[in-house]
Image (tube, rainbow, N blue to C red; front, top):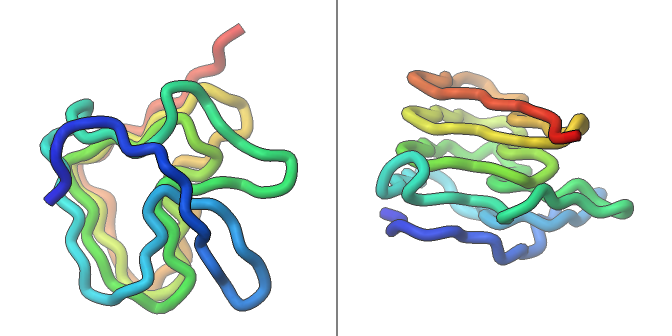
Length: 125
């Protein structure tokens, strides 16, 4: 369970061929991340963040892990969710970005679903 607040500290997400920053670098199987509610638990920066050298992620899994993410907002980071293989279920979440290169999710899984989620993308001029 994740309490209310903004979580924006970056940690290394290490894959065999690269390392990038992620707020939540998933390194275990069979996890459930439950926020305190959308716009109560926020994964991401107060303003859009990316780097010339890496594409930071909100949630990042680079192994065949299974997880559920629910009841939170992911915003203002290059890729909201990056998930490689395994199973991913996302429920009751908002994925929000305000930059033309924002990727809400890059998901390459064996199975999973997005249920009752809102995808918001807007560009500020």
